[in-house]
Length: 305
Image 1 (cartoon, rainbow, N blue to C red):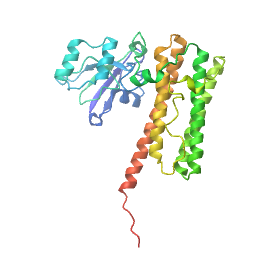
Image 2: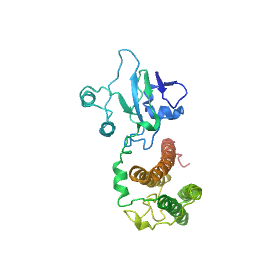
Image 3: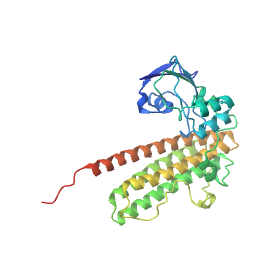
Image 4: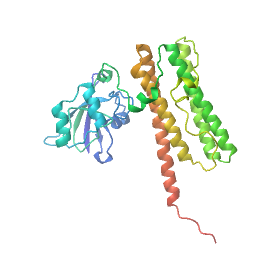
């Protein structure tokens, strides 16, 4: 067992929780489990929003680690890792003072995790992940009206896409996957309503862009699926949907990192957090479906009498 103490000016007091080191969970996962308000966006080591200071409390015990290249690069961009610390990490596997909570795994040692909320973000804005930088292409958002028009277009297109896929799967005799796509279409309708509600609250004028406004001529949350497939499994359908959801996340993330208007960046970050939740939901569904597939595969086959 390890004691992990979280400390921050945004919390009324320090909070200590117990973590099982063998679970290999990250500091961010532990924080989310116990509702510790460490800020985060991408959860993949590419934005820097979950940067924390880690203090090792267990005397004479400091476990070796292997920093990923993207964590080293992000800490370097934030100015939170020295050349000596990089050398110590690369040569001696010794952890630096600052870490990304999404990349820092809990070990069998007591630590204190300190964070300062949004103050940990780099002043130049979050660094774009490779996918976001590529996907954004030539799209440049210049006003709140334009941003919310894009958001409504993304969610509306996703809803229509899933509904059409559901109908196509039903027509070709794949009712299980058809039901899944209809469910995803319903969620997209909810997201569309939320985007329209934000538009109404801000009294913006919507002017929906065409699909050609995006680099690959289609809105980001569409899957790579276009027609009915009687052999498509629920698992494959979920994985295809996850790819689309991730592209939606990347689009909003790119806007949040590059828009010149602070109001657009702030609103885009709200969409980023919502999309991150959608991605996590699909990941949970995929994990559950994979478990179900394994269970069915391990069941003994009944022999014909």
